[in-house]
Length: 332
Image (cartoon, rainbow, N blue to C red; front, side, top):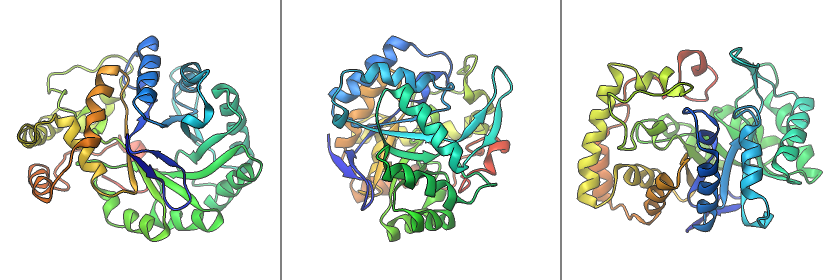
């Protein structure tokens, strides 16, 4: 496994990271034993960056990872944890964000306990709390860095101006944000800002929640609890258009001798050594497909063919339901 460094101040991590959200019900019921086996397989194949959120099934994901990581050398992997999203029990749903300094420390205390660790490698607010200046939120994380409970400050889904303000309080290791062949808004302002400041990028949604994996079909029925039931890009009318882009990409992948998913992941990785794609594999089969993507060498001709198959802004539908779009640093 290749290694990359997150920015100028962040840790060295595997060039491909594992996103664990799907192991806790985001895409319907997941198999706990298979999820744990997938984490083990990732570690055994050199993946060292594991990303989670304390609100992924309200602590379920952290407890799952604690079980999967038990007995492992703590220095052999890096934990990236998002915090701050508020939810209620049952169907009460989304309740906003909390970035107050006292909340930061409270969330961290719970995460440390659930994960069974004495520190978090990268700690980041999941979204910007509009009621709390980012300086106060990052200032609280800085205190936890100074106390030894956190190693690095991260951000997630914020705009360029917020990145600058946060970085002025404490060096930011990386920004986590959606980046894929069909989600390229970061290229205009955010990516240049990150590179100017020496901040890395961890890209989630590189397969757009399976939409551009090569495994989705227009007649696929998402099961109960699957968030894709509410995703505009998967809705009738949009999904057919988007899957036509995937078929164009498939022709490029076949000529390259790889799968659609491998090509999509490799494209993100090829956008810069400062970018680490996160794959949300929740089975060993999907992980095994993703890993060879890091060995794909995409030539200038390959990249041109990919751009021709999936031009910027070609996808239809927002990447989140409208209620969540206002909380994002960039749109699509």
